[in-house]
Length: 103
Image (cartoon, rainbow, N blue to C red; front, side, top):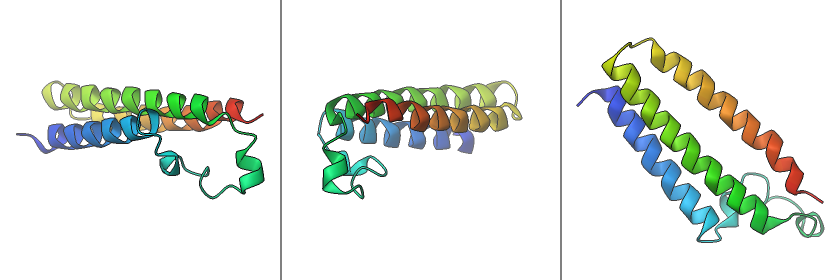
């Protein structure tokens, strides 16, 4: 199997695992910045909403990465660079949009 597809599968599985752990397993320590935030500031965060949002984003980004890896492997190898750029853009969107859960 192609290394690009294997990388896509690995990122997909890790994203699903982290997304499920945060959204369903209440593993809030996996949310970057939340666990290092002082306790008084953590009280101002809608953690249930944030965890659901972050879990959904992990599912979507993992699926996107897998689809992009398969597409770039089957059709055009240079497509993988575009997938990486769009994936990075998705992460930036996720970080900026997560600010709405801070009261």
